Length: 97
View 1: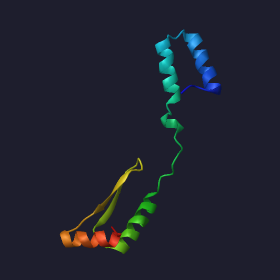
View 2: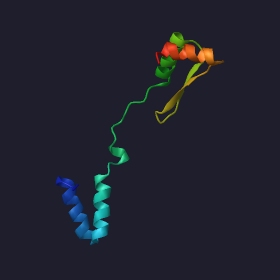
View 3: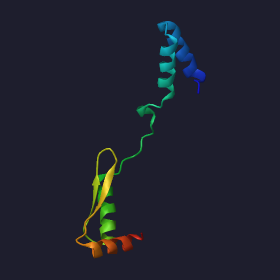
View 4: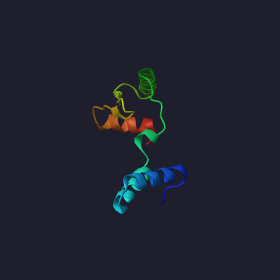
């Protein structure tokens, strides 16, 4: 894969200005082709209220013994508590698995 358009021109300018070797040029191209973290589109994070509403809807459907562990980075866990295998089977059946 190669650089195109403006990024190719910018890379060429850097290569000439800095007198980059072939290896350094290859590293520059790889770095330019790799999408940066800042290029990721902003995904709106749910508010605490939204998470609580989702949790409440699930509790209403499945009963108590459930919680959402939501972290600031947007990742999280769904946690189901059960006392015995019969209760686990009931949960699984309610979920539809």
